[in-house]
Picture 1 (cartoon, rainbow, N blue to C red):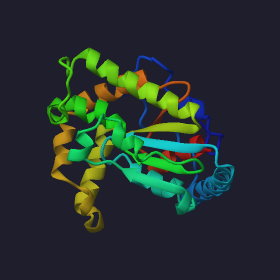
Picture 2: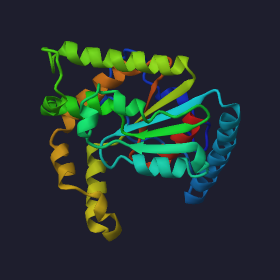
Picture 3: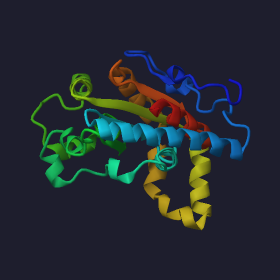
Picture 4: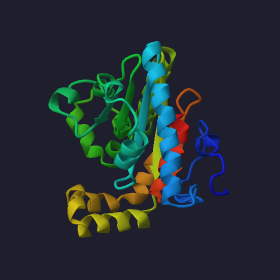
Length: 263
């Protein structure tokens, strides 16, 4: 791809039921900018357009937009949200970062807490991680299911995960039918780049708060996570709510692509 060439958003969509091997998916693409100044110029143009569209969304008050970010640690979710959405009126946009579920949340179905945070009509909602954690980290660490007190006997079987995928797809279809546009991003980072970013966090004083020893422990399960993500994306990317796999080793490139998909 030539620098400054139009971004074809369809290049990043995962086709429904596609057989996906994330080890074969690019984590780094051709630069979409000539310099830092050019990057800032392109991103500013996108944020200006997004600001205008947000005002129209709010005034129309019939539709809402839900943007979901999933990724391995240090892939750039926070930065993408901060930079791409920098021109948005905060009164019309809410970001939700989902942590470990509370006792109250565990007493409900796995979609409940996310549904409580869905955007109202005229609003933009951003999920920094989401209900997809229930078929990702929970699948990689099935002991987390024990706290959910599930009644089914086939917990952690293929049928169990298939049912969860179906619940997600059906829920998203319901939301779309009722006016919520859904855009889902998987920021795809390489294991090597993640290591570099972890080391940068350790070596940079004002970034050390981002680092947790648990991050290193999760790296030991990298291949298992890649398999879980591949299966999840293949089973939950639909025409109504597609997944976009964004090469994320270059943060600036990733932000430019995300901004164009949102537009």
